[in-house]
Image 1 (cartoon, rainbow, N blue to C red):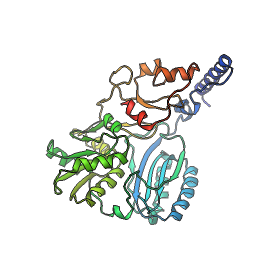
Image 2: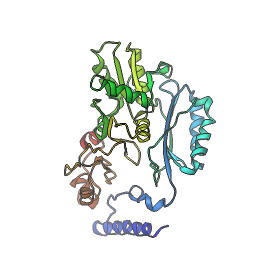
Image 3: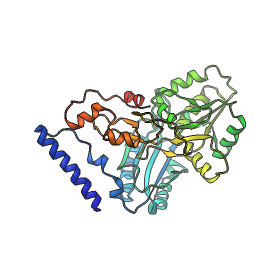
Image 4: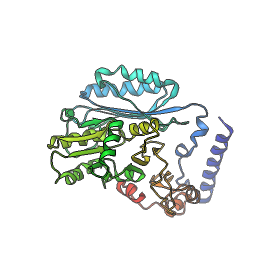
Length: 365
């Protein structure tokens, strides 16, 4: 183990000993699992963030089998990430986000190609930049009722009629021509929007996708059924659901960005002469907390208000608030979101707040 890693572990151990000696009991401390600098653990290996989804009909029996097989065999390949599988009674199929060792990338792709009878032809969405450490801490393969949470009852068969998938090139061309004269929906949650979004996009002022579908009904209520409706999300799956939902309501010209913001980021990187219509960072639900599409910074530090787009996860294990925090405030607040959480870690206060997802995300932005 590298020498800096040993120093880090020794420091963590001493902090716990001091805490116990002062209070006679062990007070809640930041988990070494979350705070251990991954650069000490992974010194040379590179990882590729990779994602894909496929909405397909899978039986409950097949889903159970796939869960066990994927967890075992992907672990053997050194893959970490989050994989959801769901049966056809809901929104069925697979939604996969992974960190793959670079030297195993072709092997992993070939492995999934062996499941064509289950998932069909897979179109991979690779991260814009490789990482020196994996953007997930472990592999989790989970069975869900729906790949995407939604209040309405939607089955896999309902999603057969998809919205029109525009390539990043066609998306860029059409949005450039229409400029302000377009109806453009950002189908992500409001805090994702604040980090970065397409020009003239309508923010879905919600914390969860399931709430966004209800808001979607309100936003399109007075629009003619023949009007163009554009929508985008991180990788495409939320638009595949929301776009189909609108198609079933009679809206004829629903268009979504194929591959989502991630694919558009690749398009801009490969065509640098074209001005990006997306400004800022594409928020991601992994250890990166986002990947920059442009250098524009659209968010501010939660404490001091300075321009910043770095996301901190509060190290108080009872809080774990995700919030924007500059390096100065992160050092001052010891990676916590508040004086209260700071004092909890010091053992001089009891944590007072119950866990609430909406408080977590709404407070931060």
